[in-house]
Image (cartoon, rainbow, N blue to C red; front, side, top):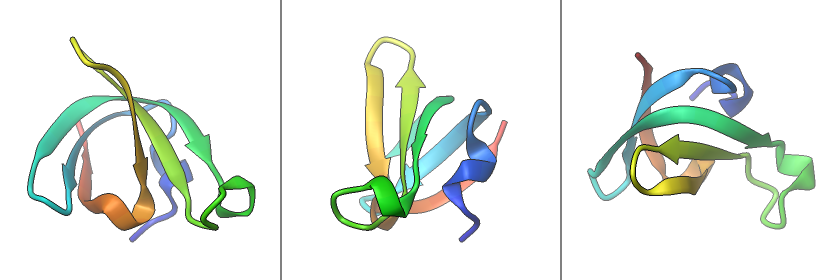
Length: 65
């Protein structure tokens, strides 16, 4: 998988490891070195649900919309 930094400030559709799909804009990106678990993370601003965080290990796939 690409570095999650490549999706920063882009509108994406994300499928998590449970198969649930999420859409929104990537508003935050945390590099692995700054993460508690040493895993990259993004914050996805979703309509109606607010900001939701995802670790790279929780993401099955991402497409740019």
